[in-house]
Amino acid sequence: MVLTQPIALWVVPVGNLAGVARHALDVARAGVPGWRLVFLTPPGELPAALREAGAAVLERPIGPDHGLRSSVATLRHAVRTLRPAVVHSHLAYADIVAATVRGPGLVTTEHGIARDDLVYHHSAGRSRLMNTVHTARLRRFDAAIAVSRATADAMVEKWHPHREVVVIPNGVDPVASVSRLAPLAPRPSTIRVLSLARFAPEKRLDALVDGFAELRRSHPGATLTLGGRGEGEAALRSQVTRLGLDDAVAFPGFVDPEQAMADHDVLAMLSVWENCSYALLDAAARGLGVVASRVGGNPEILPDRCLVDAVDARAVADALARQGLEVGARPGLGSWPTVADMTQRIGEVYDSVRSRG
Image 1 (spheres, rainbow, N blue to C red):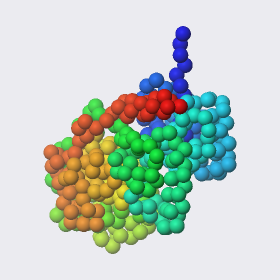
Image 2 (cartoon, helix red, strand yellow; image 1 turned 180 degrees about the vertical axis):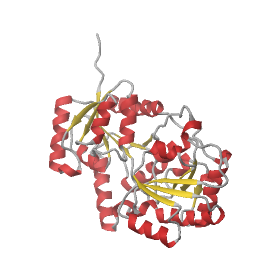
Image 3 (cartoon, rainbow, N blue to C red; image 1 turned 180 degrees about the horizontal axis):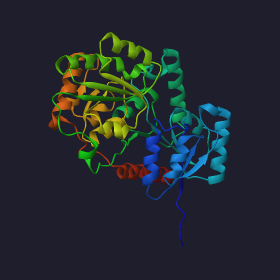
Image 4 (cartoon, rainbow, N blue to C red; image 1 turned 120 degrees about the vertical axis):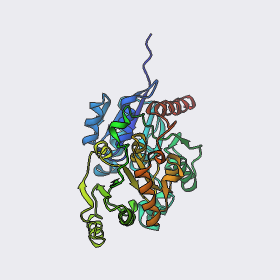
């Protein structure tokens, strides 16, 4: 007799390919041992990409664009229809919607909490409200996963979960041909610096531009590519002009990450907070130099030589120079978990929840 695998219903309340989409696509391609995955998402690029990866997808009205009432109705209908053993929600909106469901085990993965609430909420009142909401909804969940130890510590500090938070970092597979994807031969005359981040205050791109200006004093051939878009673009362009860097800084908009990494020497990320950045992981896996702020989960990914105080322009410049020119100083990933390691551990969480149910 063939036993049907239990269903884990992934609830992802955004349809674009930013943020959590990478995580969902990696898991869809690898699968979770012993489990059948179904992805519930709103319309958009993500469900199309998931289908292309061979995943089972329900494309339904769910997420902030569709409202709470419609989102709750969508999830409850999916639960009644599929009878999943586990509902696994991602992002705050999906967590709140999932907390209204009765029957299956509830699992959440936290991808985007910060030690300082104002990074995301921008007002003390809003942060207090959301902490109250998350503390309440987390009591309904049977398991909580964090993508870094720093993320888990912040969850415990702010939301006081009644169960231990399980740390499962984002998995990344080794790159077969690093020499093709990253420029390993230093170029003394130029250092090509790359940023892959939206133009938002918490990404501290102004600090990166200041650090790059310092770098240009000693390495006048250095260039900086700011790959992304956002409301801060006008201020960044003004800063670049004021510092006399118009000929050295490019604003190409959104770029293909793999090609961009192949065309640069160093990835820089000076965010106020990061949990477990795929950009940092990918850069390290591809042999790039990496410079990042010493915050959140970054020290769990990178050695100290790659970490800086983002507001110290001279330190940023020195780190960019070293990571660009000294191949031996670049981080690599060592024994970092693969995607299969990650999905294996997710499956163990599901098994644990099911055994308790």
